Image (cartoon, rainbow, N blue to C red):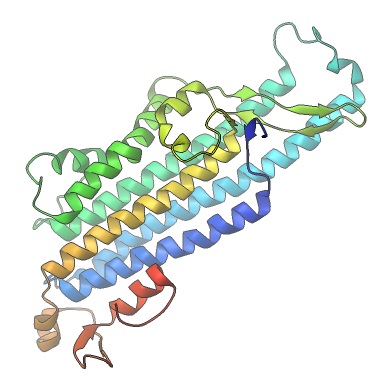
Length: 313
């Protein structure tokens, strides 16, 4: 068993995250269309898609920061390899009694990119919260940041909608931890991670392994929930990848519950019958070939998101 849990195939991992970012965008777009189909909000189309673009931007920003992190990781490995080739005596113990200045430089630079991933993922949920408030609240201007929405679903909104218990669960399990960690970075102190690099003495080839701080692992305990070997030391690279992937999972859980609420309170057939005056955006519908009933066209893109196929549920 390798004592480190790391991303071995970096390029492949990034490509998977990049692809899943487009999938998440499709899910958010599908919910916007479902809201347009089922709500009585006359301005639904333009308003929801304006909110969607903000969520999409932050998702792709986090993914791009992960790409930058991986590129920096490779560059730092080459940088350290060159430093040690030119100064082979650095390998001796006691060379840096006050701490390895080269390691400290690399750790700080990679940590700063990791922090940007944290900031962007937190913003994803803030923007998602604004979109949720817009869809659910009568006062469309009264939107809340995630932390206030998560309190509201435990308070006066508790039990009123399907999404309330989902937001509560997602917040307790993941997003609340993300916000606590972000708050520490912004208002308390930076989080310093640990250097655990290995050096091949024959050519000073570096395998750069920066392991997560105790503070980050304390906040994101969920990462160890399904590990085959929980005693493995988790690298910062693995944590960065896991945080983005976990965000996709939680977004999907939230979208699932919103869809249930929107369909349970549907105004779809009224909107279709009165499309000329009900909505400022166009209304589209399809005929289910099996039931011959009119169905929202948004079913198609939702099924692409969920199942990778078009058609009715």
